Length: 490
Image 1 (spheres, helix red, strand yellow):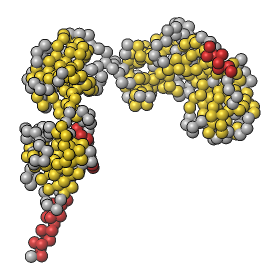
Image 2 (tube, helix red, strand yellow):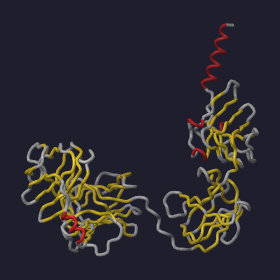
Image 3 (cartoon, helix red, strand yellow):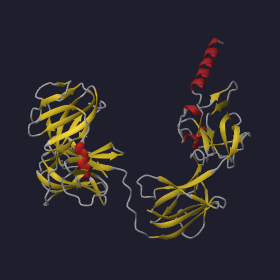
């Protein structure tokens, strides 16, 4: 008897250990798996769970175990809509559709009864309003993206839209939350038939379309999509979400970056090279998100084209003026000798963490051979004076030995090199550096008359390689205006 009792206890413990978790998941929470705010809690009645959700529950949801890995805990649509306040008999399996409602419910209480196989949604309900958008790979973006329709007399229209060849469907979204509630696609052929209303259905087959310019009209009442226009158009240029920069020792011997300029999908830079190692930064929204280097041959000893990949950094022995071109589609980098003239644009910047604790460059303005900048100092930090030639660092001036700037005065630099100055000043101060004498002068800020004169002078634009640009468009440039030299982004 005792043996049977302990066996029963062990079996019950096993059942408890294997008890499933249940989560509500859908467009209302961006299909977040294992969302703690949408987890059901078991009641005193075994097999009955409740969830008090703080938010709006909109059409298009399911119940699972938080992983999508168990088809036996994947509760979805039985083919009809759920009615708020009435138990809904759900279907089980990974192929079930989303559960839809004609209403949306604020702060609902959801009861899951796995004994009866039902879901009950209760709470303050209101008529749901929906918007629609095309979601696909047809908008020239390397990722699937969405563009919304415009409502016109109950139909949803996208006029004269140029697309690339690819697949797409229609997102049905809750108007108030933006959450996707359904996926609408073809109820028949997958290939678009132009100028013909095509039947749609929930969770059908994604359409495919060839490149061209079309007008899309979706009628949710009739559940049809009509695409008018002609295919066979020119493929729009895909949108590259990234920018690229060369990063290495090949500009000055120090590791630094030089942005590349997009020229019809090929990213280029022209300037003076010195021997050194380098790679290619992949940048998105100003942040580095990747790194490319060699794919095979890592040593660059002559002009030519080299394969790019995720191997070791390139090592270049090239010296002189070159155009460097990176093709992200072909994953190649090409070096071509540049025969034109490159004007040297020399500037000085104060670089340090004396303003906000972070290391930044602060452009200086030239007047009569002196380079000046006025800063609001934080009271601690260190800095040096950086010399740039065509945007690349070509020198660094600092103190001959450890020196703290705690008062106004003059300070001698130690040629190119030296030890960074430490600064304990707080407030507005002007720094003036003379490259000829290598003397740094620190004074209290009195305003800048010279900047007014510089603002009235004509501006000359150069790219970062020192090549004069007569009609600058968008990008990063060096601007010389009177005695003032600075970098600007247009």
